[in-house]
Length: 190
Figure (tube, rainbow, N blue to C red):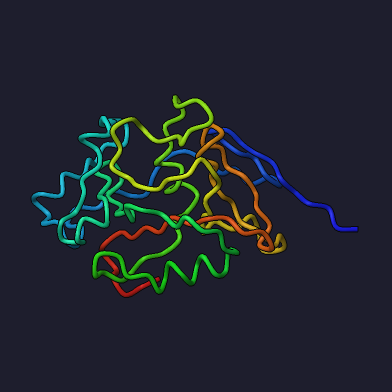
């Protein structure tokens, strides 16, 4: 009989099989994001400094207003994440093949990148995004990350945007929505 593993971890640190993984935080900030000149990107280099949503997120006209720059992390997010569910491998391929605002180079975000969007002060049912965010069609549900649990587990971490933004293990046999991201620096790399 197969046993399903399903658990949720709140923002903070996670210890799994002796591996210490920081669940909160963001990707390395980068200046010069494609579509935004380096001197105008406004990316904050200090992770300890946070911005209100209205200042943190910028809708990018260079992407036909279909993408959003996160000035805290330097990441570019699709403005409207996937609303339909797919298995992990399909979600990963969909992001790689995606064309948002006439731009390629999208991928599934890492667990850390995806949790960087979470505002833990937002109570269920969510979605756990800061008030004033510019995103559309975000559901109070689980979204895939590219972060695999380990080589033996047939699943990846996901983030639940309805239950406090906790990290959740999802078996690859299950289908959940995805939210694609890009860093703007390596346009043609998945």
